[in-house]
Image (cartoon, rainbow, N blue to C red):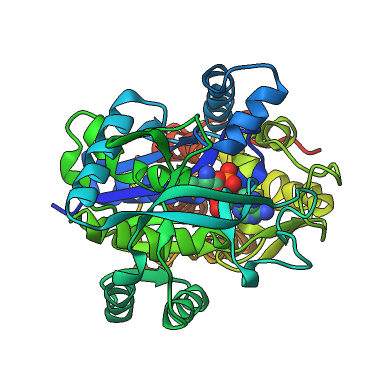
Length: 468
Ligand code: ME8
Protein backbone atom coordinates (compact mmCIF):
# COMPACT_ATOMS: atom_id res chain seq x y z
CA UNK A 1 0.00 0.00 0.00
CA UNK A 2 1.25 3.45 -0.90
CA UNK A 3 2.32 5.55 2.09
CA UNK A 4 2.50 9.29 2.41
CA UNK A 5 4.79 10.97 4.92
CA UNK A 6 4.92 14.78 4.87
CA UNK A 7 7.02 17.16 6.97
CA UNK A 8 7.14 20.87 7.61
CA UNK A 9 10.38 22.47 8.72
CA UNK A 10 10.76 22.36 12.48
CA UNK A 11 10.55 25.95 13.64
CA UNK A 12 12.97 27.72 15.95
CA UNK A 13 11.69 28.29 19.45
CA UNK A 14 13.58 31.56 19.82
CA UNK A 15 10.23 33.25 19.22
CA UNK A 16 6.52 32.46 19.08
CA UNK A 17 4.80 31.27 15.87
CA UNK A 18 3.68 33.69 13.20
CA UNK A 19 1.63 33.48 10.06
CA UNK A 20 4.70 32.43 8.02
CA UNK A 21 4.99 29.27 10.07
CA UNK A 22 1.26 28.74 9.77
CA UNK A 23 1.39 29.09 5.99
CA UNK A 24 3.74 26.13 5.46
CA UNK A 25 2.11 24.04 8.17
CA UNK A 26 -1.33 24.66 6.69
CA UNK A 27 -0.18 23.54 3.24
CA UNK A 28 1.20 20.35 4.78
CA UNK A 29 -2.07 19.87 6.64
CA UNK A 30 -4.12 20.19 3.44
CA UNK A 31 -1.96 17.52 1.80
CA UNK A 32 -2.10 15.22 4.83
CA UNK A 33 -5.89 15.50 4.96
CA UNK A 34 -6.19 14.87 1.23
CA UNK A 35 -3.95 11.80 1.32
CA UNK A 36 -5.80 10.43 4.36
CA UNK A 37 -8.93 10.44 2.22
CA UNK A 38 -7.09 8.92 -0.72
CA UNK A 39 -4.90 6.33 1.02
CA UNK A 40 -6.53 5.81 4.41
CA UNK A 41 -5.54 7.34 7.74
CA UNK A 42 -3.10 4.58 8.63
CA UNK A 43 -1.06 5.22 5.50
CA UNK A 44 -0.39 8.88 6.17
CA UNK A 45 2.08 10.44 8.58
CA UNK A 46 2.29 14.18 9.10
CA UNK A 47 5.00 15.58 11.37
CA UNK A 48 5.76 19.14 12.37
CA UNK A 49 7.66 20.40 15.39
CA UNK A 50 10.29 22.67 16.86
CA UNK A 51 14.02 23.18 16.46
CA UNK A 52 15.28 23.79 19.97
CA UNK A 53 19.09 23.75 20.10
CA UNK A 54 21.77 26.18 19.00
CA UNK A 55 23.06 29.69 19.63
CA UNK A 56 19.90 31.45 18.49
CA UNK A 57 17.67 29.68 21.01
CA UNK A 58 20.32 29.94 23.77
CA UNK A 59 20.53 33.71 23.20
CA UNK A 60 16.77 34.17 23.32
CA UNK A 61 16.59 32.12 26.52
CA UNK A 62 19.32 34.21 28.16
CA UNK A 63 17.42 37.38 27.24
CA UNK A 64 14.45 35.96 29.14
CA UNK A 65 16.60 34.82 32.08
CA UNK A 66 15.72 31.22 31.40
CA UNK A 67 17.78 28.15 30.71
CA UNK A 68 17.46 27.09 27.07
CA UNK A 69 15.51 23.99 28.12
CA UNK A 70 13.08 26.04 30.24
CA UNK A 71 12.64 28.45 27.41
CA UNK A 72 12.06 25.71 24.83
CA UNK A 73 9.56 24.07 27.19
CA UNK A 74 7.68 27.36 27.27
CA UNK A 75 7.67 28.18 23.58
CA UNK A 76 7.10 24.71 22.06
CA UNK A 77 3.58 24.53 23.58
CA UNK A 78 2.80 27.94 22.06
CA UNK A 79 3.37 26.37 18.64
CA UNK A 80 1.22 23.40 19.62
CA UNK A 81 -1.59 25.73 20.71
CA UNK A 82 -1.37 27.67 17.47
CA UNK A 83 -1.77 24.42 15.52
CA UNK A 84 -4.72 23.42 17.65
CA UNK A 85 -6.40 26.76 17.04
CA UNK A 86 -5.95 26.44 13.28
CA UNK A 87 -6.96 22.76 13.14
CA UNK A 88 -3.63 21.37 12.04
CA UNK A 89 -3.93 17.58 12.05
CA UNK A 90 -0.30 16.55 12.57
CA UNK A 91 0.19 13.02 13.85
CA UNK A 92 3.22 13.94 15.90
CA UNK A 93 4.91 17.07 17.22
CA UNK A 94 8.66 16.60 17.04
CA UNK A 95 10.98 18.35 19.47
CA UNK A 96 14.73 18.10 18.96
CA UNK A 97 15.34 18.01 22.72
CA UNK A 98 13.66 14.58 22.79
CA UNK A 99 16.21 12.18 24.28
CA UNK A 100 15.65 9.59 21.54
CA UNK A 101 16.33 12.17 18.84
CA UNK A 102 19.64 13.01 20.51
CA UNK A 103 20.63 9.36 20.78
CA UNK A 104 19.75 8.52 17.18
CA UNK A 105 21.58 11.58 15.82
CA UNK A 106 24.68 10.66 17.82
CA UNK A 107 24.56 7.11 16.46
CA UNK A 108 24.30 8.34 12.87
CA UNK A 109 27.15 10.82 13.25
CA UNK A 110 29.37 8.20 14.83
CA UNK A 111 28.68 5.94 11.86
CA UNK A 112 29.55 8.73 9.42
CA UNK A 113 32.73 9.50 11.39
CA UNK A 114 33.76 5.84 11.42
CA UNK A 115 33.18 5.66 7.66
CA UNK A 116 35.57 8.58 7.14
CA UNK A 117 33.01 11.20 6.03
CA UNK A 118 33.88 13.54 8.91
CA UNK A 119 37.29 15.03 9.73
CA UNK A 120 38.73 17.64 12.08
CA UNK A 121 39.75 21.07 10.81
CA UNK A 122 39.77 24.76 11.67
CA UNK A 123 36.91 27.00 10.70
CA UNK A 124 37.42 30.69 10.29
CA UNK A 125 34.66 32.90 9.07
CA UNK A 126 31.64 35.06 9.77
CA UNK A 127 28.63 33.46 11.42
CA UNK A 128 25.04 34.72 11.36
CA UNK A 129 23.24 33.65 14.53
CA UNK A 130 19.86 34.61 13.03
CA UNK A 131 20.33 32.08 10.21
CA UNK A 132 22.49 29.73 12.28
CA UNK A 133 24.98 29.53 9.43
CA UNK A 134 28.41 30.62 8.27
CA UNK A 135 28.16 33.34 5.69
CA UNK A 136 29.99 33.12 2.39
CA UNK A 137 31.04 36.18 0.40
CA UNK A 138 28.04 35.73 -1.92
CA UNK A 139 25.65 35.53 1.04
CA UNK A 140 26.53 39.02 2.26
CA UNK A 141 25.28 42.45 1.30
CA UNK A 142 27.50 45.32 2.51
CA UNK A 143 29.27 42.96 4.88
CA UNK A 144 26.03 41.85 6.55
CA UNK A 145 23.51 39.08 6.31
CA UNK A 146 20.66 40.42 4.14
CA UNK A 147 18.09 38.53 6.22
CA UNK A 148 19.40 39.89 9.54
CA UNK A 149 20.83 43.35 8.79
CA UNK A 150 20.45 44.41 12.43
CA UNK A 151 22.70 41.65 13.72
CA UNK A 152 26.47 41.93 13.22
CA UNK A 153 27.87 38.66 11.84
CA UNK A 154 30.28 37.14 14.37
CA UNK A 155 33.88 36.43 13.43
CA UNK A 156 34.65 32.89 14.52
CA UNK A 157 37.77 30.78 14.47
CA UNK A 158 37.52 27.38 16.07
CA UNK A 159 38.39 23.74 15.77
CA UNK A 160 35.43 22.03 14.17
CA UNK A 161 34.53 18.76 12.62
CA UNK A 162 33.85 18.95 8.92
CA UNK A 163 31.57 16.88 6.76
CA UNK A 164 32.89 15.99 3.30
CA UNK A 165 30.02 17.64 1.49
CA UNK A 166 32.23 18.14 -1.57
CA UNK A 167 32.44 14.36 -2.08
CA UNK A 168 28.67 14.09 -2.43
CA UNK A 169 27.89 17.04 -4.73
CA UNK A 170 27.98 14.97 -7.92
CA UNK A 171 25.71 12.27 -6.49
CA UNK A 172 23.19 14.77 -5.17
CA UNK A 173 23.19 16.55 -8.52
CA UNK A 174 22.64 13.29 -10.40
CA UNK A 175 19.72 12.38 -8.15
CA UNK A 176 18.07 15.76 -8.66
CA UNK A 177 18.66 15.62 -12.41
CA UNK A 178 17.26 12.11 -12.74
CA UNK A 179 14.18 13.09 -10.74
CA UNK A 180 14.92 10.52 -8.05
CA UNK A 181 14.97 13.50 -5.72
CA UNK A 182 12.41 16.02 -6.94
CA UNK A 183 13.20 19.62 -6.12
CA UNK A 184 10.27 21.89 -6.86
CA UNK A 185 9.29 24.33 -8.19
CA UNK A 186 11.54 24.32 -11.26
CA UNK A 187 13.10 27.69 -10.37
CA UNK A 188 14.39 26.29 -7.06
CA UNK A 189 15.66 23.17 -8.78
CA UNK A 190 17.66 25.28 -11.23
CA UNK A 191 19.00 27.40 -8.40
CA UNK A 192 20.22 24.36 -6.46
CA UNK A 193 21.73 22.65 -9.51
CA UNK A 194 23.48 25.88 -10.51
CA UNK A 195 24.99 26.26 -7.10
CA UNK A 196 26.22 22.66 -7.00
CA UNK A 197 27.78 23.16 -10.43
CA UNK A 198 29.75 26.14 -9.15
CA UNK A 199 31.46 23.73 -6.76
CA UNK A 200 30.70 23.05 -3.12
CA UNK A 201 32.96 23.04 -0.14
CA UNK A 202 32.97 20.85 2.93
CA UNK A 203 30.94 22.21 5.82
CA UNK A 204 31.58 22.48 9.49
CA UNK A 205 29.13 20.30 11.39
CA UNK A 206 30.12 20.96 14.99
CA UNK A 207 30.49 23.91 17.34
CA UNK A 208 33.09 24.42 20.01
CA UNK A 209 31.54 27.47 21.60
CA UNK A 210 27.88 26.46 21.63
CA UNK A 211 27.06 24.43 24.74
CA UNK A 212 23.31 24.17 23.99
CA UNK A 213 23.24 21.21 21.64
CA UNK A 214 23.80 17.51 21.19
CA UNK A 215 27.31 16.41 22.11
CA UNK A 216 29.57 15.01 19.40
CA UNK A 217 29.83 11.40 20.60
CA UNK A 218 33.59 11.02 20.07
CA UNK A 219 34.50 14.51 21.33
CA UNK A 220 32.24 15.87 24.03
CA UNK A 221 33.88 19.29 23.94
CA UNK A 222 31.85 19.96 20.78
CA UNK A 223 28.15 20.01 19.98
CA UNK A 224 26.47 19.08 16.70
CA UNK A 225 25.77 22.03 14.41
CA UNK A 226 22.07 22.74 14.97
CA UNK A 227 21.11 22.49 11.29
CA UNK A 228 22.59 19.03 10.93
CA UNK A 229 20.65 17.52 13.81
CA UNK A 230 17.51 19.48 12.90
CA UNK A 231 17.49 17.97 9.41
CA UNK A 232 17.70 14.49 10.88
CA UNK A 233 14.42 15.08 12.75
CA UNK A 234 12.52 14.00 9.65
CA UNK A 235 14.13 10.60 9.97
CA UNK A 236 14.32 10.30 13.77
CA UNK A 237 10.57 10.98 14.02
CA UNK A 238 9.89 7.69 12.24
CA UNK A 239 12.02 5.90 14.83
CA UNK A 240 10.48 7.71 17.80
CA UNK A 241 6.78 7.36 16.92
CA UNK A 242 5.77 3.78 17.65
CA UNK A 243 5.07 1.67 14.57
CA UNK A 244 6.06 4.26 11.97
CA UNK A 245 9.52 3.04 11.04
CA UNK A 246 8.44 1.99 7.55
CA UNK A 247 7.34 5.54 6.72
CA UNK A 248 10.95 6.46 5.90
CA UNK A 249 11.75 7.88 3.36
CA UNK A 250 9.26 10.73 3.40
CA UNK A 251 7.34 11.75 0.29
CA UNK A 252 7.50 15.46 0.83
CA UNK A 253 9.34 18.13 2.75
CA UNK A 254 7.70 21.52 2.58
CA UNK A 255 9.40 24.79 3.39
CA UNK A 256 9.96 28.29 2.06
CA UNK A 257 12.79 29.16 -0.29
CA UNK A 258 14.99 30.52 2.54
CA UNK A 259 16.10 27.05 3.57
CA UNK A 260 16.10 25.17 0.28
CA UNK A 261 19.90 24.78 0.08
CA UNK A 262 20.01 23.01 3.44
CA UNK A 263 17.23 20.68 2.32
CA UNK A 264 18.11 20.07 -1.31
CA UNK A 265 21.89 19.77 -1.06
CA UNK A 266 23.24 19.36 2.48
CA UNK A 267 20.48 17.06 3.71
CA UNK A 268 20.59 14.53 0.83
CA UNK A 269 24.40 14.48 1.11
CA UNK A 270 24.16 13.71 4.84
CA UNK A 271 21.69 10.92 4.11
CA UNK A 272 23.95 9.44 1.45
CA UNK A 273 26.86 9.49 3.89
CA UNK A 274 24.66 7.89 6.55
CA UNK A 275 23.49 5.28 4.02
CA UNK A 276 19.87 6.22 4.50
CA UNK A 277 17.20 6.67 1.85
CA UNK A 278 16.50 10.11 0.41
CA UNK A 279 13.18 11.99 0.50
CA UNK A 280 11.08 11.73 -2.62
CA UNK A 281 10.39 15.44 -3.02
CA UNK A 282 11.24 18.84 -1.65
CA UNK A 283 8.91 21.71 -2.35
CA UNK A 284 9.97 25.24 -1.44
CA UNK A 285 7.25 27.85 -1.67
CA UNK A 286 7.90 31.57 -1.86
CA UNK A 287 7.99 34.24 0.78
CA UNK A 288 5.05 36.51 1.32
CA UNK A 289 4.93 40.12 2.32
CA UNK A 290 2.17 41.64 4.43
CA UNK A 291 0.36 44.52 2.74
CA UNK A 292 3.38 44.83 0.46
CA UNK A 293 5.96 44.97 3.25
CA UNK A 294 8.40 42.43 4.57
CA UNK A 295 7.09 40.86 7.76
CA UNK A 296 9.34 42.06 10.57
CA UNK A 297 9.28 42.83 14.24
CA UNK A 298 10.60 46.34 13.71
CA UNK A 299 7.70 47.12 11.35
CA UNK A 300 5.29 45.64 13.89
CA UNK A 301 3.46 43.60 11.24
CA UNK A 302 4.23 40.11 12.51
CA UNK A 303 0.89 38.34 12.80
CA UNK A 304 0.20 35.47 15.18
CA UNK A 305 -2.00 32.64 13.84
CA UNK A 306 -4.41 33.24 16.74
CA UNK A 307 -5.09 36.81 15.57
CA UNK A 308 -6.41 35.53 12.24
CA UNK A 309 -8.48 32.86 13.97
CA UNK A 310 -9.99 35.44 16.33
CA UNK A 311 -11.20 37.52 13.40
CA UNK A 312 -12.07 34.93 10.75
CA UNK A 313 -12.35 31.60 12.58
CA UNK A 314 -10.03 28.68 11.86
CA UNK A 315 -11.60 27.81 8.51
CA UNK A 316 -11.82 31.47 7.49
CA UNK A 317 -8.11 31.94 8.23
CA UNK A 318 -7.23 28.77 6.34
CA UNK A 319 -9.24 29.86 3.30
CA UNK A 320 -7.85 33.38 3.25
CA UNK A 321 -4.23 32.23 3.45
CA UNK A 322 -4.40 29.63 0.72
CA UNK A 323 -6.61 31.59 -1.65
CA UNK A 324 -4.44 34.70 -1.44
CA UNK A 325 -1.99 33.78 -4.23
CA UNK A 326 -0.66 30.79 -6.15
CA UNK A 327 1.21 28.40 -3.88
CA UNK A 328 4.92 28.27 -4.64
CA UNK A 329 5.29 31.86 -5.81
CA UNK A 330 6.24 34.86 -3.76
CA UNK A 331 3.11 36.74 -2.93
CA UNK A 332 1.43 39.28 -0.75
CA UNK A 333 -1.05 38.80 2.06
CA UNK A 334 -3.18 41.86 1.56
CA UNK A 335 -4.66 41.83 5.05
CA UNK A 336 -6.65 44.93 4.29
CA UNK A 337 -8.57 42.89 1.68
CA UNK A 338 -9.07 39.82 3.91
CA UNK A 339 -12.31 41.11 5.41
CA UNK A 340 -13.78 41.88 1.97
CA UNK A 341 -12.82 38.42 0.71
CA UNK A 342 -14.18 36.79 3.84
CA UNK A 343 -17.50 38.60 3.45
CA UNK A 344 -17.87 38.00 -0.27
CA UNK A 345 -16.57 34.42 -0.57
CA UNK A 346 -17.51 32.92 2.77
CA UNK A 347 -20.34 34.86 4.42
CA UNK A 348 -22.13 35.73 1.17
CA UNK A 349 -20.87 33.18 -1.33
CA UNK A 350 -20.72 29.83 0.38
CA UNK A 351 -22.66 30.74 3.53
CA UNK A 352 -25.58 32.27 1.71
CA UNK A 353 -26.12 29.43 -0.73
CA UNK A 354 -25.97 26.93 2.13
CA UNK A 355 -28.53 28.86 4.19
CA UNK A 356 -30.91 29.51 1.33
CA UNK A 357 -30.80 25.89 0.16
CA UNK A 358 -31.17 24.42 3.65
CA UNK A 359 -34.12 26.66 4.42
CA UNK A 360 -36.03 25.57 1.33
CA UNK A 361 -35.30 21.89 2.06
CA UNK A 362 -36.88 22.11 5.48
CA UNK A 363 -39.77 19.69 5.88
CA UNK A 364 -39.09 17.83 2.61
CA UNK A 365 -37.85 14.27 2.38
CA UNK A 366 -34.74 14.82 0.30
CA UNK A 367 -33.39 11.23 0.36
CA UNK A 368 -29.82 10.49 1.34
CA UNK A 369 -26.76 10.96 -0.86
CA UNK A 370 -22.99 10.58 -0.94
CA UNK A 371 -20.40 12.74 -2.68
CA UNK A 372 -19.14 11.86 -6.15
CA UNK A 373 -15.60 10.54 -6.45
CA UNK A 374 -12.92 13.23 -6.68
CA UNK A 375 -12.44 14.31 -10.29
CA UNK A 376 -9.11 13.72 -12.04
CA UNK A 377 -8.71 17.49 -12.27
CA UNK A 378 -9.13 17.90 -8.51
CA UNK A 379 -6.68 15.10 -7.72
CA UNK A 380 -4.18 16.39 -10.19
CA UNK A 381 -4.30 19.89 -8.77
CA UNK A 382 -4.03 18.65 -5.18
CA UNK A 383 -1.08 16.46 -6.01
CA UNK A 384 0.66 19.38 -7.70
CA UNK A 385 0.17 21.82 -4.82
CA UNK A 386 -2.30 23.98 -6.79
CA UNK A 387 -4.24 24.97 -3.71
CA UNK A 388 -5.45 28.38 -4.82
CA UNK A 389 -6.56 26.90 -8.13
CA UNK A 390 -8.55 24.17 -6.37
CA UNK A 391 -10.28 26.81 -4.28
CA UNK A 392 -10.94 28.89 -7.39
CA UNK A 393 -12.51 25.82 -9.07
CA UNK A 394 -14.71 25.22 -6.03
CA UNK A 395 -15.84 28.82 -5.95
CA UNK A 396 -16.57 28.68 -9.69
CA UNK A 397 -18.82 25.68 -8.98
CA UNK A 398 -20.51 27.59 -6.20
CA UNK A 399 -21.14 30.44 -8.62
CA UNK A 400 -22.68 27.96 -11.09
CA UNK A 401 -24.96 26.56 -8.40
CA UNK A 402 -25.92 30.04 -7.37
CA UNK A 403 -26.75 30.90 -10.97
CA UNK A 404 -28.84 27.75 -11.31
CA UNK A 405 -30.61 28.56 -8.04
CA UNK A 406 -31.48 32.08 -9.13
CA UNK A 407 -32.54 30.89 -12.55
CA UNK A 408 -34.75 28.04 -11.25
CA UNK A 409 -36.23 30.17 -8.47
CA UNK A 410 -37.14 27.20 -6.23
CA UNK A 411 -38.68 29.55 -3.67
CA UNK A 412 -41.58 29.96 -6.11
CA UNK A 413 -42.28 26.21 -5.96
CA UNK A 414 -43.16 26.03 -2.29
CA UNK A 415 -46.70 24.88 -3.04
CA UNK A 416 -45.51 21.86 -4.97
CA UNK A 417 -43.12 19.80 -2.78
CA UNK A 418 -42.17 17.34 -5.55
CA UNK A 419 -41.23 20.10 -7.97
CA UNK A 420 -39.44 21.96 -5.21
CA UNK A 421 -37.46 18.85 -4.28
CA UNK A 422 -36.53 18.22 -7.89
CA UNK A 423 -35.34 21.78 -8.29
CA UNK A 424 -33.27 21.61 -5.12
CA UNK A 425 -31.62 18.23 -5.65
CA UNK A 426 -28.86 19.42 -8.03
CA UNK A 427 -27.89 22.15 -5.57
CA UNK A 428 -27.91 19.73 -2.63
CA UNK A 429 -25.78 17.21 -4.52
CA UNK A 430 -23.45 20.02 -5.61
CA UNK A 431 -23.01 21.15 -2.01
CA UNK A 432 -22.24 17.59 -0.89
CA UNK A 433 -19.58 17.31 -3.59
CA UNK A 434 -18.16 20.67 -2.64
CA UNK A 435 -18.04 19.64 1.02
CA UNK A 436 -15.87 16.65 0.07
CA UNK A 437 -13.52 18.82 -1.96
CA UNK A 438 -13.32 21.39 0.81
CA UNK A 439 -12.52 18.86 3.51
CA UNK A 440 -8.73 19.25 3.33
CA UNK A 441 -8.97 23.04 3.33
CA UNK A 442 -11.85 23.85 5.67
CA UNK A 443 -12.47 20.74 7.74
CA UNK A 444 -15.03 22.20 10.14
CA UNK A 445 -17.16 23.77 7.43
CA UNK A 446 -16.91 20.64 5.27
CA UNK A 447 -18.07 18.46 8.13
CA UNK A 448 -21.07 20.68 8.83
CA UNK A 449 -22.01 20.83 5.16
CA UNK A 450 -21.63 17.15 4.66
CA UNK A 451 -23.71 16.26 7.74
CA UNK A 452 -26.38 18.69 6.75
CA UNK A 453 -26.76 17.87 3.08
CA UNK A 454 -26.18 14.11 2.96
CA UNK A 455 -29.15 13.42 5.24
CA UNK A 456 -32.72 13.02 4.06
CA UNK A 457 -34.08 15.61 6.48
CA UNK A 458 -32.19 18.80 5.76
CA UNK A 459 -32.96 21.51 8.25
CA UNK A 460 -31.98 25.15 8.46
CA UNK A 461 -28.85 25.92 10.50
CA UNK A 462 -27.04 28.85 12.03
CA UNK A 463 -25.00 30.73 9.41
CA UNK A 464 -21.53 29.21 9.03
CA UNK A 465 -19.85 32.58 8.66
CA UNK A 466 -21.12 35.77 10.21
CA UNK A 467 -20.48 38.90 8.24
CA UNK A 468 -17.81 41.18 9.66
O1 ME8 B 1 14.53 27.92 9.38
N1 ME8 B 1 6.57 33.55 3.96
O2 ME8 B 1 13.11 27.75 11.19
P1 ME8 B 1 12.28 29.13 11.13
C1 ME8 B 1 6.44 32.22 3.87
N2 ME8 B 1 14.57 25.88 12.26
N3 ME8 B 1 6.92 31.34 4.78
C2 ME8 B 1 7.56 31.81 5.85
C3 ME8 B 1 7.73 33.19 6.04
C4 ME8 B 1 7.19 34.08 5.04
N4 ME8 B 1 7.28 35.42 5.11
N5 ME8 B 1 8.41 33.36 7.19
C5 ME8 B 1 8.66 32.13 7.70
C6 ME8 B 1 14.16 27.38 10.42
N6 ME8 B 1 8.14 31.17 6.91
C7 ME8 B 1 14.81 26.09 10.88
C8 ME8 B 1 14.28 24.94 10.02
S1 ME8 B 1 14.16 22.35 9.38
C9 ME8 B 1 15.14 21.01 9.58
C10 ME8 B 1 14.90 23.61 10.33
C11 ME8 B 1 8.19 29.71 7.18
O3 ME8 B 1 11.54 29.19 12.40
C12 ME8 B 1 8.79 28.93 6.03
O4 ME8 B 1 8.35 27.59 6.11
O5 ME8 B 1 13.15 30.24 10.74
C13 ME8 B 1 10.26 28.98 6.34
O6 ME8 B 1 11.01 28.03 5.59
C14 ME8 B 1 10.22 28.71 7.82
O7 ME8 B 1 9.05 29.45 8.28
C15 ME8 B 1 11.45 29.12 8.61
O8 ME8 B 1 11.21 28.86 9.97
